[in-house]
Length: 243
Length: 243
DNA sequence: AAGTGGTCTAGACCACTTT
DNA sequence: AAGTGGTCTAGACCACTTT
Image 1: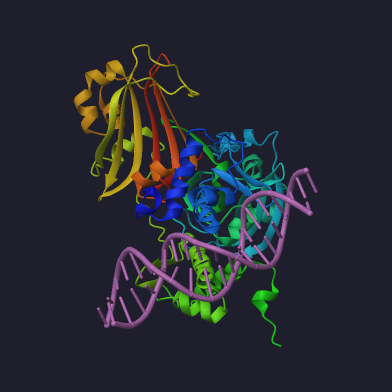
Image 2: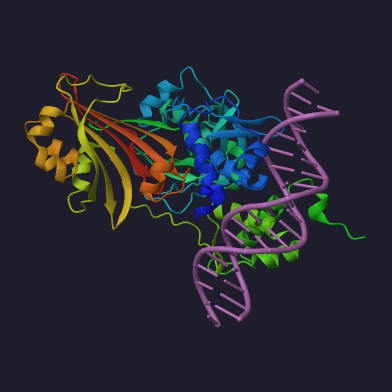
């Protein structure tokens, strides 16, 4: 009687099989671009039901190692590219430069007078109220962030045309009558919920960056507040630790 | 003949069912801490096989909405807390302050002479070579980052005792004979691979922050390089955009 | 002992792609 | 038409928790 290493182990079959497949990919036995054996062939090879193989392959898929395509086969993916096109601003002045040639496409989502969210740890709200613009930024047809901008109402009304058509930060930075005395930004790492996943073409739970920016005038009043959600794979931050 | 809305739809049953369950949780029909009906009960209610219900529940589990426990039942989770304890440095000087009272526990992983990775976009390598220390940082028993530190050999040898026992950055910053002329840091958002997931107590694919720090002396030689992988949920960055 | 979720089977049928 | 992955069933058995 031959021993059966898979069945003698207490670990679930699909975990054992996913481990074997992961190992083979790591060792380059199946190289990027090549096909895995078919589900049926793997089921035969390891003497399990097809659905058990699928369970194993699904794990590798969630890890981004393989891409099954119906009617086509399951290909091994190239390791994720580290080239990330988007730099999140860490200096306001840099922003103006970075968008001089490369303007993102703006897709409106929502627009109207709103009050500021209550959980701000910085600045004091403006008495006149705020106008909110919610929109998406796209480049080369790929949406990479969703931004909700709150603008102090007097400023919004005065520069409404430009603020609707362009990125808000450069406008505020450029206009000589606007006084920016403080500008802070926080970044946390979050996961896409169902709505965000749909808008950013992600899967639920995929990493995103939650960025909040607040700009205040000389009196400490908030003239601009923005909540931005970036696709995680587009985020690149570069900081000078001595500045 | 009654219509069957589930089966008349072209969407897969498990997706439809996960949608129904998600909705009920969102509306508070099942509140945090309460149990979902059993898999068997849901299978009966929607007239599907138990494994199809499991497929639906698994999706909600991956979204962090529910926690199935074998032999116990499936409970609705409270929405994830937003309290995030750790601040990633954006100024070297801040770092020294932030660790004055609160020193993380250091868990060694690897140690020895190594050469620098080749893909550095900043500074020039030191002729004498480098010593690498790889270790984990923990607080309250929870490991929150894995760090690989490369130290220019002469500096490492001179301050070996402190560098082994303490955080490296404050040591370099404190010691009067060490000249830090440039200090840059980049942050990208990544996902945990199988090894990182095990070390940081995450699941494969969970968000992490990949941070690279480089410190140079006055001649532009790299005296310190570190690759740090943080748990995504511990990352909090606060930046001054006008600095 | 009874009840819960977790894994697995063998087979059916479907959706999609390639030949 | 043939081949691929995707979904689903009905039922079995298992691991774990609670009674």
